[in-house]
Picture (cartoon, rainbow, N blue to C red):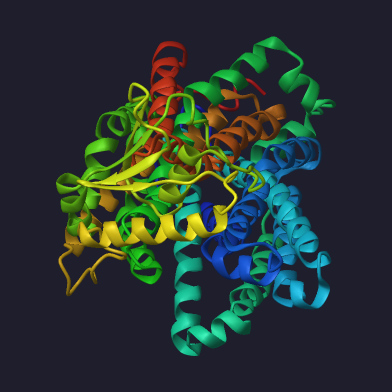
Length: 558
């Protein structure tokens, strides 16, 4: 029997070969996530260099869409490279994915900006971003499958949990390289050209990853299956064209990865967005706070992976979803209390309300940056949402309300409509009066310094760490569970698609969807309804329809 052991093998120490497999697979995947997240962490600088022709608000939206493009194509990468991995093998497939990811990231370091190339610059950037997403779609399934097929029975959750740490470690690495470069060069030089250095570093990481992975051998499960002539000739057809497997793919998506994804992206990305956009914490401070929570929380991936070998994958994942559903609102309220207590006090003392005539308020979603709002209600709410101001909406008023009005405590500021002859002057008047009223009511334009001001940094880190621990609960055991769902000959293909639809679509679009909900509703906490509803769906479907997999012998159904 291979190094992975038979179904009768019990837990045992790692062999040197297994340690090398985990190290090589995890290190390469860390570097891939590092490459993938550079774009998101430096989105403001990317916007300024590649979307220069657009106004600031539209520029930011198009940058977010370019970032999201990488998430959008991940399922297609899962199909392409999953099929390749089931046809030719795990090792060579995720060697190809890391080459594509590394090269497409490295090239950004030398990409001319809009000032030099014009419209060709953002087109080239988005093309490289799409290549990153395709590569990542093939990387995770390959790394998780490769490690799982080397793991002994009874240790699969622990072994694959090292792969689960890689996204978090990759994000931390990106934050640290960017922060170190910024501090060394200064903000002006970094914004001018220093932002290219973290992308250039990916070339070194790529060389290390390829060198290490070339030394690996094929997974024992795939090698045995190939020698016996049992590999799939049509993995896509077997995975998605046969109901017995397609049913498992659908259950894996709705009953596991969708909820896991929204808990993950809420704990690591939406929390960062919430701190910066709504609580007015400056970017470097918010990055440091998130990084501290990630450092503290990362070992829990291994803890819950190992625990899942003892009590099962399903109870831990479902418990993480349940905790998220029950505690997101109080935890994010507590973030406001400790990160920006002046804002919390202002919201309670002088709440902001938009009072508008009936029928004046429409749905103000602007995911593409091209929507045009004309009514006074829509324009006032758009301004407040972009400013990160918490507000309530009252529509109606018995005919007494002629135009939408913003009330800050007892002070009322009349809105304006885009159809007015003097709309430009009215816009300037309205925005100035609202800012003055917010300042007078004690709404801070930015949070006090966390360490020396009124905030409480260690309580913020504690709350963020709790959110990260939820991430480790749902994410630590998920790779082992997905591997155990499917037979070896279609495993790479079958597990990759639900993972990347869940994480690429349900999770990847979470910041944009949640912000749109906040913009439409006014309450800064209303964006949490999206992850809560999805996590609740996974909790119900997973609890009722997914079977425990920890005792599955992944060699028995080859």
